[in-house]
Amino acid sequence: MLAFPRAKINLGLNILALRPDGYHAIESVFVPVPLNDALEVIIAPELGTNGLEYTRTGLHVPGSVDTDLCYKAVRLLQRSQDLPGLRMHLHKVIPMGAGLGGGSSDGAHTLKLINNLCQLGMLHQELAGLALELGSDCPFFIEERPCIVRGRGEVLSPVDLDLGGTWIVLVNPGIHVSTADVFRHTTPTGAAWDVEGTLRQADRSTWQKALPNTMGSYVEATHPVVRDMKERLLAAGAYYAAMSGSGSTVFGLFDEEPMLSGLPAQVTSWKLRI
Image 1 (cartoon, rainbow, N blue to C red):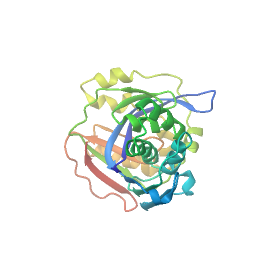
Image 2 (cartoon, rainbow, N blue to C red):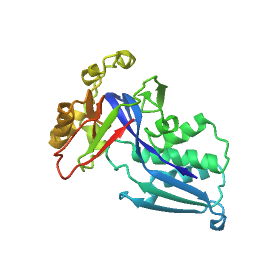
Image 3 (cartoon, helix red, strand yellow):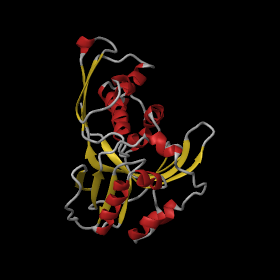
């Protein structure tokens, strides 16, 4: 069984407060975008009960395999039930440490794939609960439609946001940004936004001021190329451009297909239609 875990972008990211449990309270709009990894899981009886053979190709995934969210998702499911032997392969396209949620998407899709493949019968909310154990962004990829996201990332409110036909340019400057480091250097705002009201406005050019990424100031100061890429996207006609998540990927949204050239050699870019 095959799945294509999608990346996400953040329309705004408001770091509200540090919670007593050590996580940060956030406010954002998560939107899935058509930049995909490929994940395949098949039943392999010869591996025995709870056996797992896991391989990866594509972009390098740092760390040992037991920190990989696909691997952790399998072991999480095996915690409450035996599974047949499984062969799993991940082909990595979404860059890691880029603010696009690629690892979280892979982990969440592993849960969904195995639930379907092995006919576990787990309900949506059960999968979302397990996904939260994998990481704060993971429950969104169980939902995988535009959502206003609050709490530490687990409070999802699906929103009627039609970006169909919108062009998106993603620019990754090849910099791995530590999420923990960015959180340490971001001062919580302490004030919620009127996200719903902003999204209801017909003029999407208002998003640029109304939905900033509050983590962006630190990343742009330490990695000026992030600021430069955002400014270049706005100059090319983007009605909204921002860093996604904790970075370092920057994206721009366009009503018409943009023509971009002369990007620095070290960056990787994708031009896609939502």
